[in-house]
Structures are given as C-alpha cells and as structure tokens.
Length: 168
Image (cartoon, rainbow, N blue to C red; front, side, top):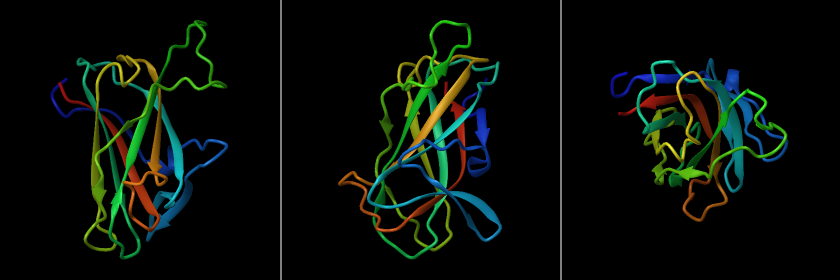
C-alpha cells in the first residue's frame, strides 16, 4: 500500500459501539449524523472492523474529523486505544479490557467558525496499535479527554468520520 492509503474507514455515528459508562452520544449537525462528545469528562465510542489485506507497514495513523456547533475557543484532547482481535480461541475476551495503552493527540484548537471541520491525526506505532496486522479484526476506542487540564474547550464537539491510514 502507498503512504496515506485508507486501511479502514467509518461513518462514525452509524457504526459506533457505545461503552456502558462515559459514552459519546448520537447527534446531528444539519443532515449529518455525528457522535457527540461533551466537555469536562472522558467520553468514548468504539469503532470496529477488519484491516485491509494490503496493509504493509508498522506505522499507521488514526484520523478523526470533527466540528463544533457553537462558537467556542479552546483546545480538544483526543485519544485512541486499539485492540487486536484474534478470533482463534487464544483468549481474546471482549468482556475484559483488551485495549493497548491510550495514545493522545496534541491539543487541537477549536475551529474558527461554527460547523468548520477539523482533522486530527494520531500517529500509532505497531506496539501502540496492539500489533494489528492485515486482515485482522480490530477495535478502536476513540475518546475525548475532557477531564484533561489541556482540554480547554468548554463546549461539546461532534465527530463526523474516522479512518485508519497506512503511513509507511
């Protein structure tokens, strides 16, 4: 695969799984369905899928595109955790916490205008992506860390889409 090729893509709100606690909620912006992440608390949504069979490299990027429906200023802290789901009776347990450690993005500033999309990329090494390989099932837990002192945006944000990209 070439640098920047998409390994997985999600229409985030329509394909999300919601954890029992501290979950994002379904929302909309105009006619676009979104995942809404409130301020001041760590909230998450989980995306799942099979990685493209052409995945070649060990270094990849998780990308999210988001917006703010109110005029606000400040920064947002996004983080992602990956779980490699090997479905071969080797002990992968969805009831436990199979995720690798969270990898946070740098603080992203709120968009300059209401409804303007912001793209946030989180670079993941092979270890940070739980050694997820081609044609394997993966879970991606996207979180807004509103509890972080670096997350200073005092408004909810809406995620429109997410992707997992090959950057090798």
